[in-house]
Length: 273
Image (cartoon, rainbow, N blue to C red; front, side, top):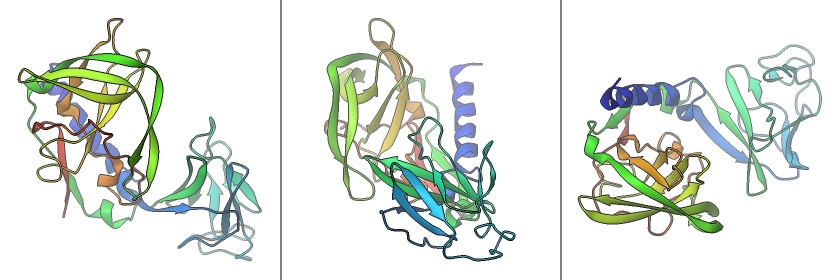
C-alpha cells in the first residue's frame, strides 16, 4: 500500500470514528459538577463531585424510571464488566483514572471526566442533531510534498503554557519540545507535546485557519528516532473535537504555533446536511 492509499484509509477511518454512535458528533453536553447534589438536564438522579469521583444517587426518582424497572434510577446502568443497574448511590471514576467507569441511560453514554482537578459529566447521545445532520469532512487532496521531514528537540523539562480553550477559559497546555521543519525552503518551528520515547502531538493554525479550514487543527507525529528525526505529515492535520460539538474543551494553538504559510493539506471543515 502506498502513502496515498494509506492516507485514503486514514480519512475513511476518521469519518467512521467521528460519526460512530458515541463519537464526537454525539456529544450534547459537558456538565461541570460541584459538591452539592444537583439534577442534570434530561438525566435521572442527582449528580455531584466528591473525593475525585463523580457521584450519582436516585433521590429525585422513586419506583419505575422512564427507561428502567423498579429499583433502577430511571434506567441508569454501569457500563462494562462492572455493569448492572444503578440502584443506590454510586461513584464513577473519571477518564483520568487508570480504570474509568462509564454509565448508560438507554442509548446515551455518560462519561465522567476530570480537567485540572475539576469533574464533569459528558453526555453522548446517538440522536444528537450534529450527528444526524453530519454529511462528511472536507479534505484537501493528498499531496506528498506536505509530508515534511522534521527534527524534535526536547526542552530540559516539560513546560506548562497557559492557553485559551474553546470554552473561553485558559488552561495549562503541557509541552515538551520544539519541532523544526521547512516549507518551500523557509524554516518554521512548532511547540509540541510528547517525547522521544513516544509520539508527538501539536495544535496549529495557519493562513487557511478560519477561512478554508476550521480555526485551528491538531497534528500527530511518529516517535522521533535517536537523532530526533520524524515526519510532520500535514496531509493528516485533523479537526479538533470542538469542530464537531461545542461542548468539548479544546486548547488553542500556543504562541508560535500560528504559521504564516497556507497549509493546504489535511482536513478542512465539517459538512452538514
